[in-house]
Length: 306
Ligand code: NAD
Ligand code: KPL
Image (cartoon, rainbow, N blue to C red; front, side, top):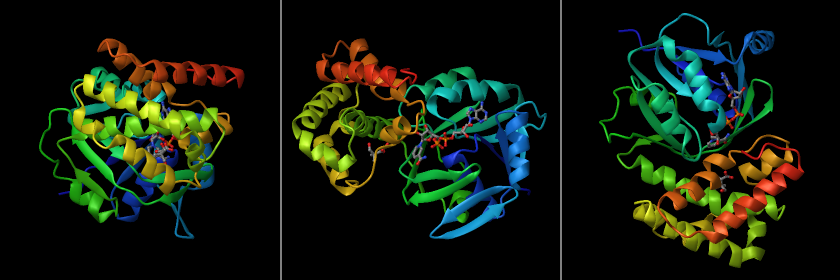
């Protein structure tokens, strides 16, 4: 039987990282690009390039725009959280019966918005600790080994194609506790990323603001508990300190977005946490203050604050 085609929506860092590894394993892949101009630019490049351990390899993966007619059975959504729902809506009419959609977005909120847009599809949530960045257009550097946790909201059985990820060298684990994973990563990102932007420092620089980190962690633990995620709260403070030490020399993803003048995913990180706290009548003054400060900071830089 022919393997199912992987459609990849968004050829940025993670989209390219997945597409090139799947293609390298001989699996059929199709990129869906934003518009005809991006498709022209991609064709001019002759493919997607992966840099891994100093080796560069280009893969001539076929590409199309959302208005192509080819049916979609398996889709990887690799856009930013704020683009995901609109991007999925643009291909919704192409989804086959029983289509599966993998959602790679950080934070929370965008996954539910996508699931509501395409209720006919099975949405699989992915929490990724891999790291990648673009060194040029359509060229990605695999910067940090990690693991992809996959699961769905129904705590359903693992799909039968996980062997394809194994063949492609994409480290993964199926979990029935994907929400716990997503909440935990959300909490880690909320404890670290906004403070690195506000204090203009690397992750390790937060050691000088231990009191602020600790106050945010205490509130995050309370919010997680109020939101029915007590397991995601366990040992949060200790893990945040560990991540700060282990990634001391790195700039957080939000710091990098701001430094490069890019929109952040604030609404799906601090925004989501603060709104969840309100919904559950959970007092979170420090998180709210940090969110307001971050919004002011983004506005002052002329960046979108949503
Ligand atoms: P990115 O900005 O590099 O790539 C997103 C791509 O989506 C861009 O190429 C953009 O043009 C494209 N896109 C947007 N709307 C589109 C549309 N309608 N149709 C087609 N393409 C569209 O972002 P990224 O770094 O790959 O991040 C993607 C998600 O993965 C984010 O939520 C991010 O937080 C998460 N994530 C990233 C990393 C990482 O190391 N890069 C790690 C873990 C999680
Ligand atoms: O995931 C991260 C990020 O920068 O987005 C870490 C390193 C955990 C910091 O929150």
